Image (cartoon, rainbow, N blue to C red):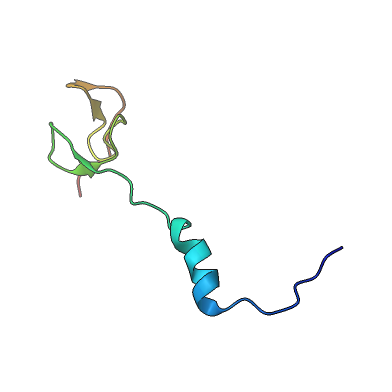
Length: 61
């Protein structure tokens, strides 16, 4: 099995890793309660999706 003859520099290593970063998920605003949520998913705070209640939301304290 082949082994490297010389050590790769930090710059070369970092250039290779430039595309490894994770992108941030998209954020939507719930039409019913105004909380932030992931797009195309039920709102975790009120339980509404596309204008109708799908699941019961969390109780307000």
